[in-house]
Image (cartoon, rainbow, N blue to C red; front, side):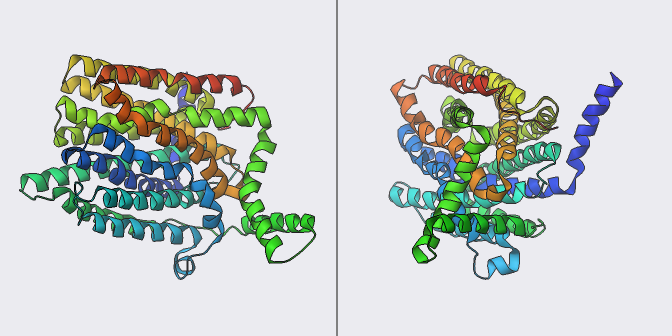
Length: 457
């Protein structure tokens, strides 16, 4: 019995690594933009009187996350003038994207949603593109903090990345909601516009913190990419501008894909992609409409901030770290089966809340259960695809796998508002449907469970 306790304690000690603190910050930088284009934008549009369907379809801007792998090769190779030289390749790209998001918030502060909805959504799209681009290099920088042979550290790093993401999203949400409510109570007419200026300060602070994240120059990655290009040029038999361009495109776009299928085999690779695409669709449908549901059932912005953001953040941090330990010891496959079962049960709790009416106790239970589920599911998912990537194509291959996962959650979940409207506002039935959505991904996982060896050992 004592040996088991010691093993868990040893697993917990992995989190003491200074690299975990850096990964925590990177996760926060990645999660914060979702406060802007998810919670804040949705509630802003709701309070301006726009329909659930409009709010749901506005979520199509998240679709860019599903396609960021298309420009990942650019992020891997193109250097930003001045920034790359001063900050490093990865950090230079992150700072550039942060500046774009900051400028977008300033523009948002001058927009009236009912009069300029198209412009508002367009700026939201710019934020989403900058955020999706930022994620490419954040994930690459995060993975490159850990050596490829450090399986346990990779699982722990995945947990810290998730904690960081939810810290940026949850605590950023707390700041956004309380600031908006403060300005509203003060009688500020455009209280959301004023809130976005305050949120801009958080972006500046995160960029200051980014300067403490170490970035190494990986000459092996660059040399391997150039070697791949040269092999392709040799096969083409010519060396000119056209063949160089073809070699570049083939090496950077085709190389990661070919590497993935070669490593896993066609059948298993397709099973992996099917699972990655389907895994969190039910959770995404629930998440996209959750804040609208909270508002309709009668909770104030302050209550949403306390239960959904503040309390949810504490729960997420604790259970993400525990999820990381579970992934280290039991492996990511078992952890994802466990998380899938939790997803189904959690969505049913929301259905009960919808059927019984407003209850702070049940609301707290539902939020805690949802955050526990998200913690286990996300840390297992991140560790899973982090361990699959080829270090020669870190940014591109991780972005490709993450984009496939995001595709299901963003494109399909954008119809969530329309689904609630089609059900005539029957939130209970909506949450039952999201429960059923969990099943297909678990079927895919069942078929590949014994053929994909992913673990922390």
